[in-house]
Image (cartoon, rainbow over all chains, first blue to last red):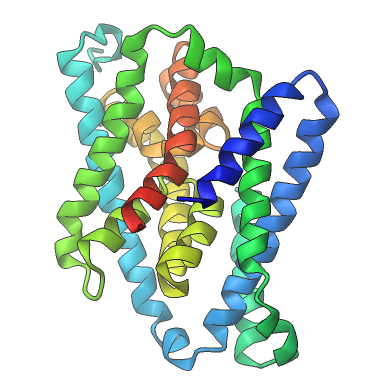
Length: 94
Length: 199
């Protein structure tokens, strides 16, 4: 949970500095590069492990199944609320 | 789209570098990922805090609109839980964690890699990038057959930025606000859900 402390601290700081547009630009650049770096390192530790490299195909299939399950579930959820909670204009009535 | 391809490129470059041992072992042993992740979360927080739209969404919205992200989260978790039965090698908890990425692949993958293991991190990256691609491709189809909220739900956290153009193209500009609200709420929920599920 402690990792979320950083998220919360950033949000508070960001809120306080929200009038300074340069802050957002710097934060976005930083986010972009730290993600690239972290994903690259995720790759190196995966690449160094022969067993995981051999399993990449099946990891891809696991990912695909979970992706389709998640989309199907969320679309089902959207159908339920557009029917029951009067998002009338959202019905595909044409 | 470009960004997700760059991130896939980073993953591939890393895998190649790791497999061919191109990087000095001492460098890898440093393992700065824990610190880098804290920095990333801090920056993500600043991004959210600075973003006027986020506070606007949380302050003065018609509560009914929040049903859209709520149903997207519950639906995703339900769908993932159902299909996890046919995912060999992954338990319910791991599957739910991957689903909780809600399409926010960059943060989800590195966060899950840190607390749930590298392999699960790779699954989370691939699965959540696929969610963005699938939404970009299937948005018109989803809108036609399952209603105008369907592509928004499918887009998940990306419905506020990368998939927003295709969504508004398919369901009309009047849904742009709902789409942004959905993306904002899911972006806020993804890291919290991941940590809650894996801890």
